Image 1 (cartoon, helix red, strand yellow):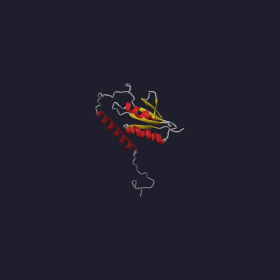
Image 2 (tube, one colour):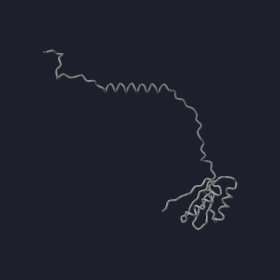
Image 3 (cartoon, rainbow, N blue to C red):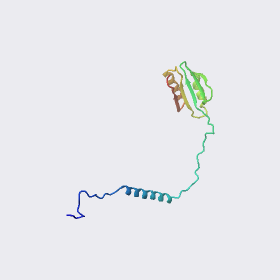
Image 4 (cartoon, rainbow, N blue to C red):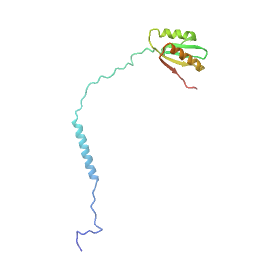
Length: 143
């Protein structure tokens, strides 16, 4: 019974260590990646870049119509020009003269602080009757 190969409960069992295996796998992966990257030849070619039109000043042809509650209108063409005051009878003729060359301008409709909803709708109807297709309404928050 003194057999040296006999199993005894106090004998150490063999263990499989996985950490060295992980190290070897990562080393092989890094070698594969570096080898694959060295196979590709990098080439450079000229690419035409777009040219900016920031230096070219565009003409603003937007017509700004401000409707007020007392039946008058303020009109200007272009953001930097000055407003001119018009009455309801003059508005149609003035916008028709601005669109006489066949251009389809953008119109920005602005309501003054005390303008009624009905007045804005009448102005919208008149602009649509004149053939304005690009129409926007400018709004401002209360307060």
